[in-house]
Length: 386
Image (tube, rainbow, N blue to C red; front, side, top):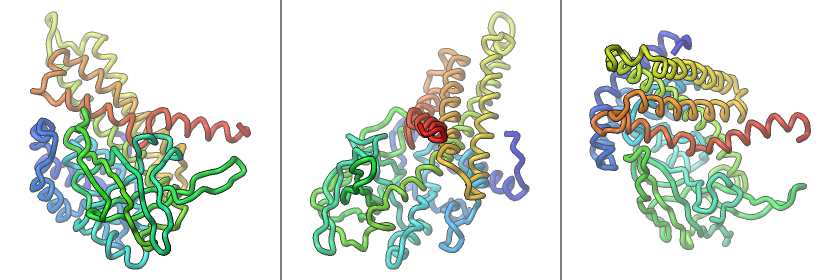
């Protein structure tokens, strides 16, 4: 990438690249075929990441994290995007909304996640409420000092079995000028809680070794002290995680695009047809030119969002633009690379088909492309009262 980075950032990236080459890349093909990462391998990666200082690099030093700024984190996420997420996900970046923990919650949830003793899952998506968060039906009814949770979540992704879940539920309805609006609250719910069942979800065609779980809640009783943040303020917490998460998806897409461009350019320069390298044919060379141009544009959008976040000025539109453009550019880059490789691009002997499959998911999770376009257009129209 052409973005100017500091010497300290260069050292971090060089160390991370070496880590990925040693601990991650050698296991990718096998983990993808198996559809899972062996527990002992995931634990090994986690421990090595802790020793190297990569673990919880996104959280402040005051709680034991790495304390890195958003721009440096964006560069790290870009490099991590080149790796299988089922493996690289063990280099955990705990969700920042855990910083809303108070009192006993800090020692029970936040600090163990920073140290690697515990791992959380972010339970928002439901079978009937994917992009439409307000269609959520999982609810918690007040019973004295307790809440009784009933409902279900799915597509809850995590690299390992979570120790607890940050569960978003409906706890009431507010009357607003636009009509009734559900009041959403986040709860910290421990695995093993009576009535809380967690089952491995179906295997996805993309990121095959990255686990998804299906959660069900049958009269799960939790004390009011398990509320994360404030009652009725769950969506505000979710928005903080989702916006920055979209920037990280954009950064990861840039990393994967760079890898695909390198593979495509090398193949185009060495693969010969009709007596000359296929890269000399415009049908191939123009694809490479488009890939390089869209990669640079994606990098600039992502880095702009990171810089705005460092200044506490990032908007939901900044995040949406970064994810939308980078994820769709990645999709085109992956398709171009398969086309350049021809039949070999779909063979399991090469990583191209896996990168192609993995790339497809980026336009769906953390908010579909359609949701990102809605965020961007809504922001534009709001200025004119639309």
